[in-house]
Every structure is written in C-alpha cells, then in structure tokens.
Length: 513
Image (cartoon, rainbow, N blue to C red; front, side, top):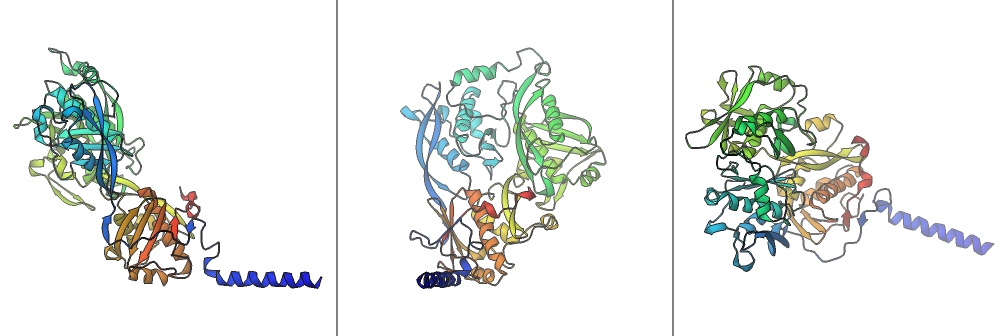
C-alpha cells in the first residue's frame, strides 16, 4: 500500500512538472494544426523571387493539316503570386507545333496588345491580341481561338475564354456581325467540324440579320459593392436577331437585371427603369462601331440611392459590350441629352473620356477577383470576401498588406476586428518563397516585436489569420515564419513559432457565413 502511494505521488509530481514546462504550449493555446519542430533546412527568403517555379504545362497547337489540336508539353517559368495565364499564352504564341507546324498561321506573327493583354476575372480569361491577328483568315483566326481556349481551360479556375484583337471582338462572318462569344476548351474535336458548326449560325446571304435568331455564351460584367470595380460571370443568352442593335439591347437587358451568381455584385433589383431608349450601334469613321446608350436624367440619383457606383456601372457596360459585339471599340452614354465625359471613382480616381467615348482601356484597373481574408471575430476568426485587383488577388505580399490594413469600415461595423498590430507595412515583409507545399514568410524583427506586445489571444489569431488567408489563396499546406533573418521560437509566449503551421479551420466562426 505504501509503495502504491509513493508511485502515485511521483506520477502527480511529474505531471505537475510537465504542465509547468509547457504552460505556453498548452492544447487550448496551440492548435493541433501546428507541426513543431520544423523539419528541413530553409533559409529566410529575401525578396519575392522565391515565388518563381518551373512547371510543365500542356499547350494545344493546331496540327500541320489544321484538322485538329495536338498537345505539346513544355516547362515554363511561372510565379506563384500571379495567375499562370499570361505566361502560358506567351508560350503558346511562340511555340512551334509538332512536325514543324507553327501555331502562327500563314507566317503571321501574333503578339499581345495593351497593358493587361491576358486578364483573368472570375472564371473568365480574356486574351487581347495585337492587330496583326486581323491578317488571318476567319477560319485560321478561329483555329487560334480554339487553341487558346483549349490551353487556358486546362489552368485552375479558367472555364471560359474570350479573344479580342486590339480591344475589339472579331466578327466570324463577312459582314462582321456574328459574334464568337465566350469559348470553352474542346481539344478532342475536329477543327473543320467546329468551324462548320459556327458557319451554320451565320445569316444567309441576302437575308436580314435581324431575322436570324442567335444563342451564344456571353461574359457579363457587373458593378461590385462598395465601388471596388467589376466582376464577371458567363451566361447563355438568346438574341431575337443578330443585328448589332439587337445584340446590344439583349446584353444591356441582362446586365441591368443583375448578376445571378457572382459574389459581391451590386443588387440591381430595386433600380427603376434606367434607360430612356434602346441602345443604338453606329459606324465610326475608322471602320469600327460605337454603342450609344440613353439614360433618364435621374440616373446618378437612382444609382446613389441603390448604393451603386456610376463609374463601376459604366465600366461594366463598356466591358460587356466590347467583349461580345464585333468591332465595337467605344461606348457613349447619354444622361438626358448630355454625353458622359467624365466620372469619379472613390477607388480609381478621375476618368476623362475625350468626346464622351468610353473605351476598354479607360477601365483596365476595374476588373476584380474575389479572395477571402480572415479577421478577428471575438476569440475566433471570420472570413470575408474581398474584391482585389485581378493581378493581386493571389499574391501573398498583397494579401499580407490587406491584413495589415485591417477590416473596412463596413466590416468593422459588422463586428470584425484587426488581427495585426497598427503601423505595419510593405517594408515589414522581407521575403516570400514556396518550397514544395510550404510557404516561407520572412517578416521584420519589428513585426515580431509589435506582435509580441499584444494581448495573448492576438498571437494565435494573428498567426492563423495569415496562415488561413495565404494557405487558401495559394493552395499550400504549410506555412513557416522567419523574423529578422531567423526562426524564433516565441514572440508573446502563446505559440511555438519554431514549427510549421497548417490551415486551422477549427478557429473559423462559420456562423457568420
């Protein structure tokens, strides 16, 4: 009996010693998703070049006889902070096909056009080719479009592809009226058969295009809440006829009816009838087309009451119309009898339209992508969908800066709180890299000092706000932190930072939706 009592007291003593030594790492403070200690010998990254990586991608090229698409696998230098689409398109336009068949038909050298020649917005990728593409026959141009669609739809998240030439859609018939619409990848089908199917939709010679119905997949752009910009969704639309006026009218009807599934789009259901007349498409002296839109005098007041930014609405209309209707380069909007010649956006600043001509390049900064940021919600985290410029929505530096800036006023009003201390900025992100399935984040010593002085519960929320936000956006499984050139074990005593962290869904307050 005495021996058993001594053993019991010894066990209790050892248990008390263990609890005392690991007080800062107790289970309630250290979630199971932490993996200490870190395995592997990684150096703290300096700069963002560590986001570059090499990956094998599939390029679909027209065969030598132009009957089908053939697959060529190439290794490309890509960047984890940007979408792969532009790098892949550039490789496709310069890659010779099997048997020496170039993707560039007839010796025509294809190039990209504009400052954002390959734009991914939602599940839609829009490729803007240079004017040299107009030297191709329509059938050869269609083959290039099918190659682009098949290649790009292999990338994560891309389901539809639009192809423009110098900011304009290209007509698929001799009258330059039949739209190509948004395309999906169809790599296994014969190109001549696909071309014949497209030709069958043309208005027969001698007949009125207005009497030939059309059904086509179109990309519709909608203004986003808070005046952030515009987002895209694809939809199959029915057109009573193929005339440009009918195309413009059906597109505007669909746009003003509002988005069906786009997250963060403005609610347009409460808007009154905004347009005073049907859209009219006119020919320009340079051979292009312009869509004229006519709105009631109270347009701006109606939009303000509905919480819709007028600049974002005009951007959405310009993008929608120029993406679909062949040869439309400009949109002119009238409010009453007055053309809109300037707009102000709280997010994008002042916009000036010479002669009232709104063109696609005026709104190149407006397309946005939705990403999830995690902020504090009581003792837990809550994810919010945030609109960010398409080129930033998956870049870890941009996401860290968004976390540093904290919740918006609307998000604060909804009860969310910052997860990172005030005073942090871009200079505190010293480097980023991805090694296998692990994201390496190198932060400043000042970052560690500021975080270490916060309340104890902040430390866990700060860590997993970064881990969950970046892990979801980049698709990595683990995150490792460095501070001021070294891996620290403690900052404020709440977590063991010398390990690797996995995404922690258990901290997320799912009741907030």
